[in-house]
Image (cartoon, rainbow, N blue to C red; front, top):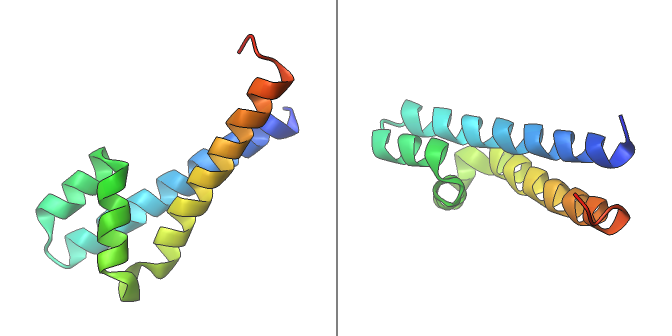
Length: 84
């Protein structure tokens, strides 16, 4: 596996972990609509994470870091091989 592909996979997994963690926090607090929205819409997870920063610091950091790693990895892959 190439390092760029590994970065994409790592970023994706970090983002998914952060999203699921934020949804779990929302379910635990009884915010059912926020939890469902967080699962299906990434921006809802970010908004909920910011609104509940005391409980969601780590998962929000995972989500943001995963998104950043995925975006940078995808840009680097496109620069290396534009056919992808």
